[in-house]
Length: 248
Ligand code: SF4
Image 1: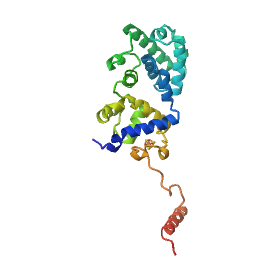
Image 2: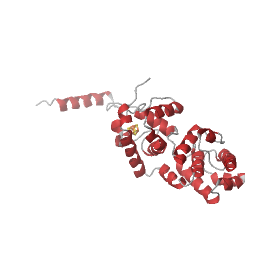
Image 3: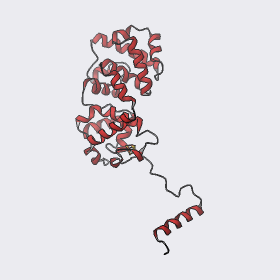
Image 4: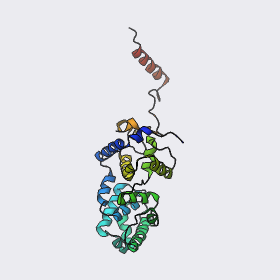
């Protein structure tokens, strides 16, 4: 097994607090989404189902439009397919998601509540393991982690896991970090991934947790001489030598 960054795991509480405050300062959409959906497990489920392959701002707009027209599973179920599609327009794969949401609402109405187990959630159309774990953590306070692209990427860059696939990341995080951090890990890593540790060109120089990050998979800064002509390189080396050993 490859080495992991035990120093970062040991300081995870401090690291998460710094990530949170930086992402909130930069107005990460995920915190606004959390406020808008916190009232009901159904709204959390809807937001999570719609957010796949969609920016949080667009998802939030669609959820707010939907909630104005249909707040409960029975109201969503009663919407016509065309009406539901119009309300979800703007999120990725909105037609497929409208079908899934309508069928899921019907199942929830039959059961009388949003399922609070992994198996129950996985039985809903359009709900995979990541979505189910996020709902279990956010709506039902369970110590599980939903691993999406942000959680997978940042965990590996930090070095707290050394994995290739999100399922391995979920197993590794669940094994190695204290359970009290799992429930909100997705939210905080997503917020940080949207604002600082971006997929391409992360803001490492101003990152508040750079002292603990292994930056796994990131290229180091280009050497000063890269891209310069041979003469420019020689003169650059000469200048630096003269600065180190002045001739007087
Ligand atoms: S130092 Fe860079 S790679 Fe590491 S967490 Fe910060 S932004 Fe991400």
